[in-house]
Length: 409
Image (cartoon, rainbow, N blue to C red; front, side, top):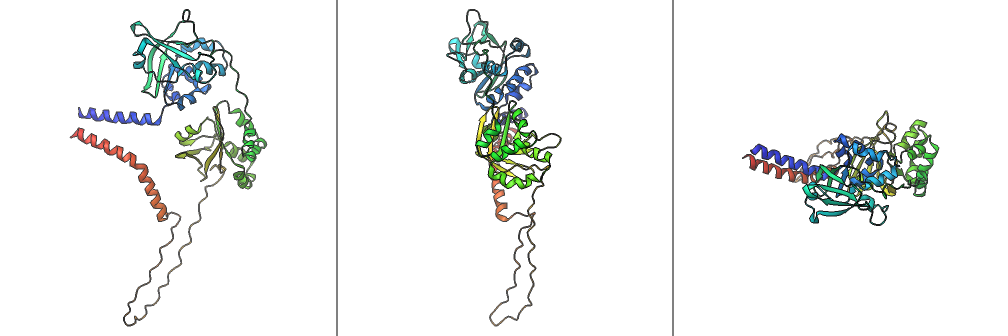
């Protein structure tokens, strides 16, 4: 019995850790192959990123078979985005809440309504409780006399008051959502860069192989670009000119990640990331944040800081940085030269002590820290930082150990 209680506590702690890390709708649905088509179009329309940025959300998913009638209509991606955004409610509705509706019905706002693309009262979903515990869903602009509502099938994933993923029987049909939607206007990425302090980098994109085309072609699938400011590029140009044509291209491609990351997402998705240059070789970089400040680190030892935002609108994010990112595949990591060895101390012959005086032996000065040593103040700072970072975890572990001991004894 005590072992069971211990297991329960550990399970609760694991669940808490999951909640703290946030949710990812793509990963949630990836565990259920029957929703692979719905999951694919959440990513293709960039709705997945919008869902992951929210704190309170309900996603109404449909099986692969249920997606068939919608796919047969041949809708464009912008129109498909409108239809699927009608299936994302901006409130939390778990299975229990749905079956305890006060007044037997309620109206929920959706991504489609919040986008501003839904005129009038369209863009809402009516949720109703019927006899026998059946819960139905219908767009607010549907004809109640002829429309057959979708019904609740089962709960897929619930993290109370954060995210609820539930399966419904069919797609929510809405003439307004399915009306042809205009494609987003084309974005000229080099013009945006040149207008916001990155003209040198933009010019190199245009003059180096198919760099500019590669950047432009990757926007629709999601792109995050770290654009060095002109001053940083001016200092780097002598190194750039000494590279081969392939090396020049890879340096430029190294400044982009083939995924859209808002600033909020960068702060919560720290770690190693691939770049447009990642193919046979790594060409990876690391994103880290210290509070509100986000830095980009390369294995070659460069640490660049994001200092501004040119554009942050899914599927494109453009940020300015204060240094050029140098990949390890092209640049060796700079190692500081070793400190000079201390001058040898020549011991003087002891002199005869005068009357009333004592001889004090000379002391050799402490050697300067070598390349493998840390100055005392830096070492202390690192230790203090480690203590501060571990304080929260230590407190939590102490509490857990106390609970485990009390249960076991």
